[in-house]
Amino acid sequence: MKILGMVCSSRKMGNSEIAVKAALMGARDAGADIAMIRLTDYRIEPCRGCMTCVFKKAPCPIQDDAHRVYETLLEYDGLVLCTPTYILGPTGILKTFLDRGMGFMYGYGRKLEGRPALSMATAGIPGWEPYALPMNALFLRALGYTMVDQFMVYGQGPGEAIYHQETLERARARGKAMVEHIARGKVDYLGEEAPTSCPYCHNDLLLFTGGTKVKCPNCGIVGRLTIKGDQARVDWESIPDRWIEEEVIRHFEHQVLPSGPRFMENRREIREKTAVYRQFQVPGPHGE
Ligand SMILES: Cc1cc2nc3c(=O)[nH]c(=O)nc-3n(C[C@H](O)[C@H](O)[C@H](O)COP(=O)(O)O)c2cc1C
Image (tube, rainbow, N blue to C red; front, side, top):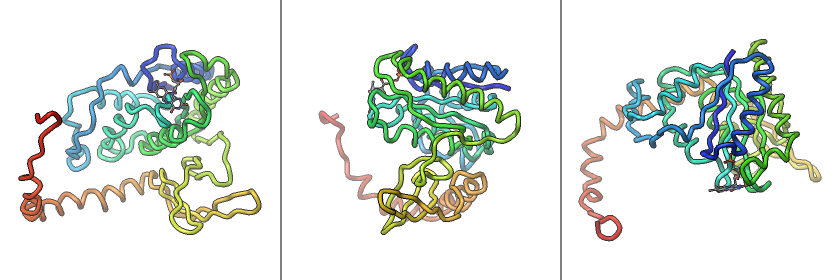
C-alpha cells in the first residue's frame, strides 16, 4: 500500500511539510510505503483552454510537469494534501494544477475515484482561512478522492505548527486510519460535521439561493435551512453530488462535449459578430 504526501508550499520545513510528514508517519506506522512531493518543485503552467484532454481525450499539449505529477498521484493508493493559506484560500499552484487535471477528472477516466485523501491547510491566524479547506475539498472531490478528514493546522512562522501537537497527532492518526480504510475497502469520514455541513464535502460554506434555499458550492447539492433558537440545520434534497462518477460523466457528455459541435456550427456567425472586437485594437500598458 502506497501513500503520497503533497505539500503546496515552497517553504522547506514549513508547517505544511510538518503536517504532511505527521500524517505520513501514521501511514508508515500502519505499514504503508510513503513518499512526499512538493508541488512548487514542479513546473506547472496555467491551462490554455484548448480542451484537448476533454474533446480528444488526449494528453495535454503543454510540455511541463503537470501530467507527470498526475501520473504520480495514480501510483499511490491515498493522498495526504496540505496547502498553506495565502489570502484566505489555498496557494494558487493547487488551483493551477487542478485546472490542468480535466483529463484525470474525465477525459482519461476517473482512475482516482474512491481513493482516500486527508485534507489539511495551514494558516497563521484562525478565522483568516475561509476558502482553504473548501478549496482543498474541491480539488480532491473533483478528482474523485474520498476524504477521511479535513482540518486546519495553525502556525505563522515556519515550524510553529509544533505548538499544536494535538493537531499533529490528529494528522498522524488519520494517516494511519487511511491505510486501515484502504485495507478494509471502505473509506469513512472521521471529521466533525455540523447539522449544516454538506454530506459530501463536509464543508459549511453555503450559498443562499433564495429564501431559505441553500446550495453547497462545491458539490452543487441544494437544501433548506431551518433555524430554531440559535440552532441551524440544513435538510439536503437527495440530488446527487456533482462529483460522483456518473454525474461527472453526465456533465461532460451532456453539457461540455455538445459545446464543440455547437461552436463549429456557429463559428462563421461568431467570427462575423466578433469582428468589431477583433478590429478594436487596444495597446498594452505603456503603449506596447
Ligand atoms: C502571501 C501570504 C499570504 C498569507 N495569507 C494568509 C491568510 O490569508 N490567512 C492566514 O491565516 N495566514 C496567511 N498567511 C500565513 C501562512 O498561511 C502561514 O504562515 C502558513 O503556516 C504557511 O505555511 P507553510 O509554512 O507550509 O508555508 C499568508 C502567508 C503568505 C506568505
